[in-house]
Every structure is written in C-alpha cells, then in structure tokens.
Image (tube, rainbow, N blue to C red; front, side):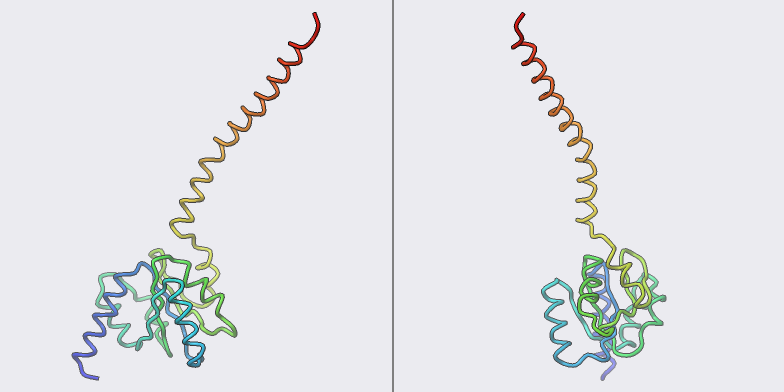
Length: 172
C-alpha cells in the first residue's frame, strides 16, 4: 500500500473517531464470513458503524488526535473491528447478545470519556445509561412526589366528601 493511501485511511479513521462519542474495539479473529455479515447487519439496524481496520493504522489515527488514547494501544493486537456509536451502551448490548463462545470479544472501549480495557468490562458497559434513559429517570423522580400529593389529596377529598354526605343525611 502506498504511503498516500495509508495517510488518507489514517485521516478517515481519525475523522470517524472525532465524529462519534463512543467506540469499541472488538476481536473478530475467529468469525467466519457468515457471522461477520450477520454482525454487520445487526450493527446497521442498531445505528452502529462497524469498521475493520489494521491495528497500525488505527494506532496512528488515535495518535494524531488531541486526546490521549494511549490506554487503548495495548489492545491493538489480532484482527480488530471498531464499532462507532453515539449511544454508549448500544454496542455493549449488541456484543453481549451476539457473543457466543466469546466471539465477537470485547478488547477495549472508549465510552463516556472513560477507558474500559478487557472483556470483563462488558457488564459495566451494558449498565451505562444513555442520555435519554437518565432524563427519563430524572423526570420519573420529579413526578413521583407530585403524584403522591395529588393522590393523597384525592383520597382525602373522597373521604371528606363521604363524611360530609353522611352528616348531611343524618336526621336532626
């Protein structure tokens, strides 16, 4: 491969890393063509960009960026595919769902501005909540006290109404 071609690929990888907030390094060494095609389809359905890269080109692309990605460099061995996504836990859920016998296996991930190294970090990555999930949890927590007050007022109002009705119906 010519040096100009390598430089353009490095620039393309670096631009993709900048474009997405989160990326996962996945080991796809033992996957056959059928399994790889199925993984690509599932990634497309989940809005994940899957890119198989040479480790040296990915290493150079990460070095060219402003942020320090050095904790990931040790994971760049074997056949590496990179999953890019804007929601931190979507690739982790896909890997966990697809992983049979550790294939595809998680090498490392960069999610929520943190590094996760090793396959044992998969459960922690699945547990990360997306921005929309956190907002929904906060809204539910904020609504809970208001619902309790309204419920108490409604139940108290029915009780008060029943007492007044009973008192009004009593003969004097």
